[in-house]
Length: 268
Image 1 (cartoon, rainbow, N blue to C red):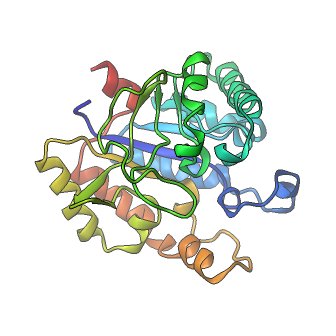
Image 2: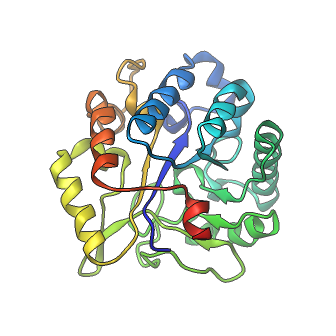
């Protein structure tokens, strides 16, 4: 794979804060407006990408999924209930992914061939999930992050897109190598925390290495007005930092680098 890809994890602002699914109804839904913000920015930059849509979002707001597909983007799956893969049994995981695939296909009329785990939670303890994805018809996965994080990561995993044993093709998020360490520079809190010039410098370095850029963002990161709730200090900082700048930085990113959907990049 030689082409840069832009990916969007379509989940609402409260999903990554780890509330139990039976508590989700207590939070304000803002996913429709925040996703349309992302879509409008991408239209302005004439950029298409891959949207990993959470099943819970698709079930509550199918019009969002329809609009994503109508505007020419790829619809992939983010699972159904935003649960850590390594906290599920293999049977629970398979049912979760299958449910989301069936739902998204019923909305778009198109097969779902891509998957990204909530919290990038395919780790060494949950590599059993990869053969399950292939059996379900998933062509590529983008869940293995070659960094260390308290929630996720396989630090010694390959940095570049690669085949997996018994599983789908793996497309890791971009990192820049520093000796034995990989620096994450591909979106999320890293994109919000650093000045845009720092991100651009790292991504240009990746491009000079003739490597594809795999970037990601969440719609809620372009929604600075979403509710502030009490959180532990580090989680609060990670979640709310730099939200008011994300949309503008994202537009600059898409004007500085060219992107396309994952499936199209693989097909080319």
